[in-house]
Length: 430
Image (cartoon, rainbow, N blue to C red):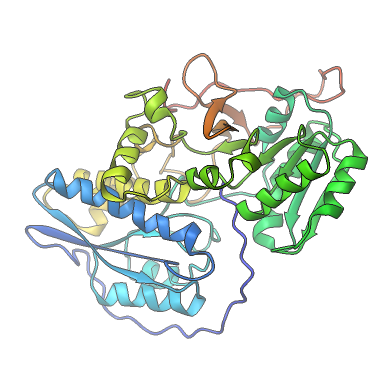
């Protein structure tokens, strides 16, 4: 799950016609031209620019290894949309006019250019934080799946609460849809599992100068588990305010902030925080080498080809997008066309980026979600993230998001226990 806060308004835009489309655009006997686009500058660049960085690291490593079927990847042009809806349209048009074979590493809150890429049949890969309509179509591949359903309950939050033996929850979000909508699934799950939630505030202004009022409400309510759907800076401010009010022992559950740079910048604010992840934790590259080869390769590629870039979910989404594209390219063989690459990817039933992600069934992931949702958990301890709540084998826990839990049994607190389900086929580490 990616929580994104966007406050800028959408400008009026004009769609310019782009006439060129070709099934083998960008392909030569020795190379394949692939473009990238996203918010490389602007107020959310720190979140989205790493998507392109991750993809570039993957392609750099791939070319060093000889490319695919005798062809190397020429990664460019890489177009900056400036965190602007009109800029995103222009970026997509420029890539089509450059006759790139595919666009890999899309990272933007305003994917208005999706209509251009889709209409021209350009295979497109990137971070899915946009609408399902923008990622609709058989050639659109969002990392982790193109279709998201924020209305389904998130049993992971109730599971974490019960694992730390908490009793009452508080939920905080900004007053913008990208934040408050992220908490819909959280609030539904807490209600479903009969967990008292005396504080729900989805009206916090983005960039609020103070969170004292909310923390005072939390203190008076007796909540001992706080869920935040804010961005990392808001979460850090929340943590600092809780400590100032003597609530440092309250368990915090963040949906944003799992980033090595955040831990370096402010380890005190993150200490003890639980993060739910839809990926294999980066720490497994050293804790369990060779068990999750995709994470091993991601960490190695970033250190070699993007030194100094913090490891983040955005960078991993770009790297995994490049990996998915490459899998389709290999399957297409020597006769490289967009049609063959897209068809090959859409036959994958348990793609997991070689152990970096929970499996994605690309025969279904364009139009819906499967009932079994597998996640991992980490907790910040000092200057590192540590996997928690892991089963005896692997690190993934799997949940059924669609079928409600049985209500015949309850915990002594009156909560409905979270029921785990067997791992889905292709779950890494099994």
